[in-house]
Length: 387
Image 1 (cartoon, one colour):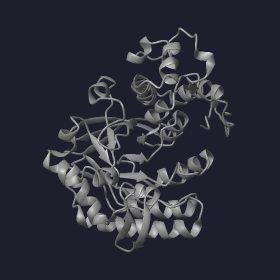
Image 2 (cartoon, helix red, strand yellow):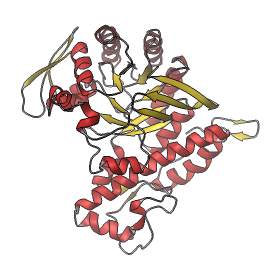
Image 3 (cartoon, rainbow, N blue to C red):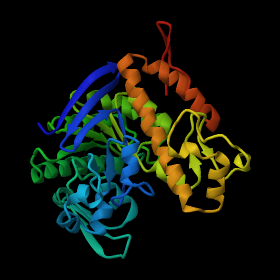
Image 4 (cartoon, rainbow, N blue to C red):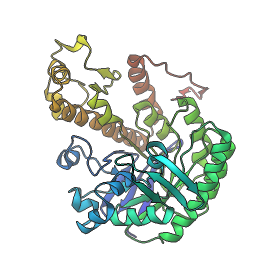
């Protein structure tokens, strides 16, 4: 089997596993940096390899519009095109169609929309999304879905029904093979009954993996975590579970505690472009004057190329709008998240995940001005972390 998922350890609901793909094994839980247009912004593949990044995500919508999926296929697929030998996941394009474009028509078969680049009319259907992702050649591909505003019940109900119908069309257009693993997507907004309905429908299709979509799109953190608690237990235990578009450190902890295996987000590189960085003492904004004379490294608990530069120098680059700031801070932020999930994986294997979370979260959230949520209970003398 080119694709195989093995759970090697559990700690509560959390799992440590291995997802085997044609381009290498992915240790889980895993965070995937986003390479929207076949590049993780400002960071060469060489440096991603040096950080032991096991998986990256590329975007179907953007690559469909530019440079075009057929061109990518002609040049050997994404792996050859972007010189990345590791596993790649592509999303379906659905989220971008509904969030970036001027929608002209939604029907039972797909979406007609105007490109955000040049205003030209385009069409995406489940079958077309599958064909684009086959041309791109990613290891893991996503079913075409509709991501609605999370709190409008009528819109969410319609989106769930459409997502289910489109999933069946995607499955018909893309029979399971040994080169690409098709994941289905659960929708349902912030409504527990719709989440459960969607999770049960998608789970019955025998897919290689399952994604949870439509979260981190405007609902509160507590609502997101509640929806995970309604959704994750329904998904098959022997398949990977992917929470789409989530990358805040406290959200990674929360998701892993609740049994999520895969995450992706643009946040590490986006924050870097705005002069912000993750640290174990909380997120910091290097534009602030307090860092002007600080000689210490950005985070003493990490050792990467960025660690060799002082906070004062990094602040200078940010204020001077030097492009090196984007590179160094992106490198650091990606390393922070990769290191976090790697240490959580080790904690799961060692049976001490809750102790890890109880140490990490107060330090990280305390310095960001956030409040660590109250623990729901004290059970058998152990802190039950509500993260």
